[in-house]
Image (cartoon, rainbow, N blue to C red):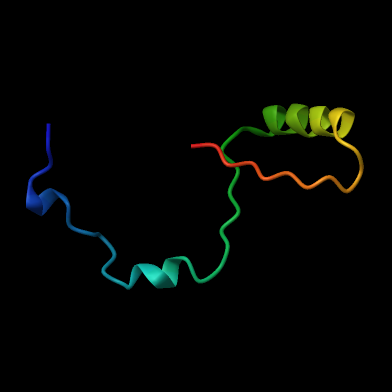
Length: 56
C-alpha cells in the first residue's frame, strides 16, 4: 500500500542537513547483547583494530 501525499509530510520541517550536522551514536541492542558483542570483539580483534559496523 502506498502512502497518500498527506501521509508523507515531515513532522519536523527544519532542513534535513541540520540533523546530519553532528554524529548521532545510538545503540539498537540491549545492554546484555552489547556486552556479549564487546566481549567477542575483544577476543577476536587485536588492540587498536578499527571496526566499521553498519547494520541496516
